[in-house]
Image (tube, rainbow, N blue to C red):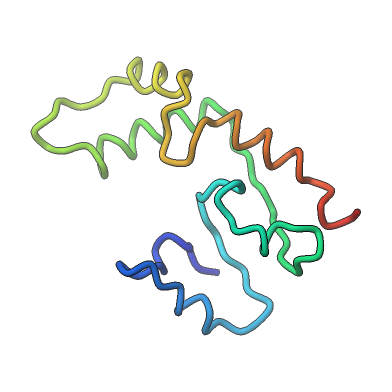
Length: 113
């Protein structure tokens, strides 16, 4: 299994994915809404497994990630209260937590209809 975001080259190439044997198992944080229609329409052979984490775990994980990976060193660390407020306002790299989960839930029967 590969993480899609790490396999996309600077030019946007997904050639690494194209070279994998079928069936492919790919992990990603990309919201369902950003996948092309050819992957999400009912006749597509693609299947999605959506994992939804406990919101409390997501807040703490994003807080650590923000402070250790993406926050510039010249800025003070993000407090847990700030991380919580951002989460509640829907600020996230992947989009609002509830919005992405709700969208995935609405497509749960796509492969079976």
